Image 1: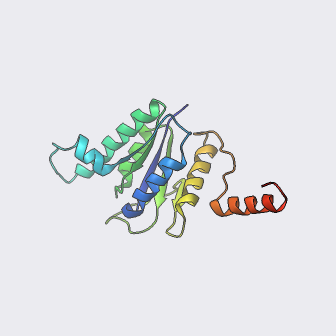
Image 2: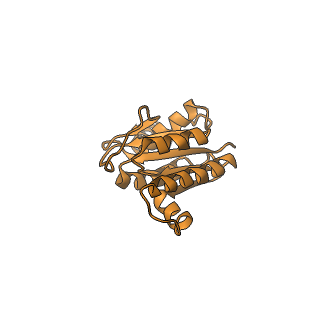
Image 3: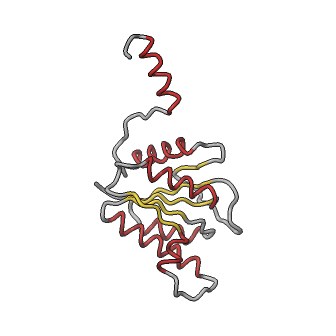
Length: 170
C-alpha cells in the first residue's frame, strides 16, 4: 500500500473537525492514517527554536518532512497547517510526491495566500461526509488510492433499507 499526504489549508477552526473526519473516512486507504497539526510540530519538534519572523515557516517545513517520511513508508498523513505563505506550502508540495491540497474556506489567517488550484475546496456549507467523499474521489482520480466503491449517505442507506423491507427482504 502506498502512502499519501492530504494537506489542509485555510480556516483553522474547520480544519480540526475535517482532519478527524478524514482520518476515519479514509480508513483502509493506507497502512495508517495520522493527523499532524502545525501546533503539534511546534510543541514536539520546535520547542527549543527561537521565535523569529520565519518561525512559522520552519514549523511548516518540519510538518512537511514528517508527512513525507510517513507517506514514503506506506502511511497517510492529514496535515493541518493554516500557514499563510503560499511559497512554503508549495515547497511541501514539491517535496512530497503523493500530495493532495484541500482549501478549507472560512476565516483565513492574516495575509493568507490561497492556493491557485486546490485539488478539493471545502466550503462552509459542505458536510464533513461530502468533503471526505470529495477527497477520496480526488485521491482516486490522481492514482493515490484505489477507487472506492460507492458509499451511501446515511439518508440514502435508510431509503434503500426501507425499500428492501417493502419488497419483503427484511
